Image (cartoon, rainbow, N blue to C red):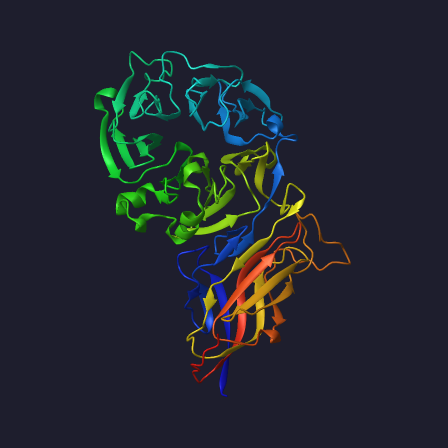
Length: 526
């Protein structure tokens, strides 16, 4: 039967999507863009859309804190002081204690006797760290880098706080759940003279769940039932004015409000991920949700009752936000979700190799104090992410895998034969890249391609040796493999994975040489 042979180069135009079906329509020759992925596990995206295996993790503290208690919150306290030279301390909330180090991984108690299992909040105001939590029996505390104490004056028993307009704003007092209180000007101990309160729709079935200073206004989030967001304008008490911004949507809790470039993101009590500016444009409609492509993953598996325990933090240099969220029957955050916003539409991936309770952006003293994302584990350890080792804690390999949707290359009614396949990769070591090909039937075929030669580093294995290695460096190459066992197909899905210890994977494209019959065939193949 007459046929035509073409080469199709696939580049990546999207991330994980559970709501777009399992089939995508792409062209049958030249360069095509795969619009989404059926699986995107332990990968992140580079600026040109290429897929890269996530980096490994290294433990910051050598021994588990509090016999393996969860790290329920982390914060980097940077104090400028009088000489202008900043001091850095990493603050962790674990068990019934708050601990601090000297930016060296060795932690000591600064506050003890707290209520276990509370959700903490950290705010720096006038060079002092303000600490509070959802535990109604724990009074708000302060820490100046040396001494911890109870916040002075007569503050309400707040659980969340925010610095705005040179005042400390607080909320979450169980006696006044819809009230926002502000301190005196530049004085976190003045709650009577130059201070005041603003009631935010009391008795509406919700409580204040979040505070955030944004573009000269204070945003007040209420939830977790009906949902509403309010805006407080003005720079002094006489000018403070509250208006309701939107109904039926809000932030489930303060630690799931996060920076998003010039925007502000938040997670609502149904698990959807939203942005302030998109909410301003679309209101509470789902079209404005950043997470609409993974609604199935969220609605089917998210444990909404425990969602407020999760955290979110953004790495603006890499362009993504990490979320630690409770999935399935877990009562604690157990899945790390990555959202990349650099491509106009969000691209998602799941970081199943990294499980943690909390996430925070803090400096890495071993890398010139560059700000990176850290994970607070469920096992008493704090970990640096995106380390070049490509293993978890120097021991466990990371399995990076993607799966393309079923593609039928022009028309589903013409039989095709896959003659050859290639991967456009930047070699990162002598590892095998595993390939799984699945046609419209349930049959699948597996093969592998060598990932290249040795590298100069950093790498734990396959480092270049003079006179015995092939140096790849940052070279780009397309590596081809014959796939005669693939046979005929009408629609084809491709899965790629690499799970070898200390091995990286950087994949720019997938190439297929396809022979397409010119006559349409309407016979059933199932």
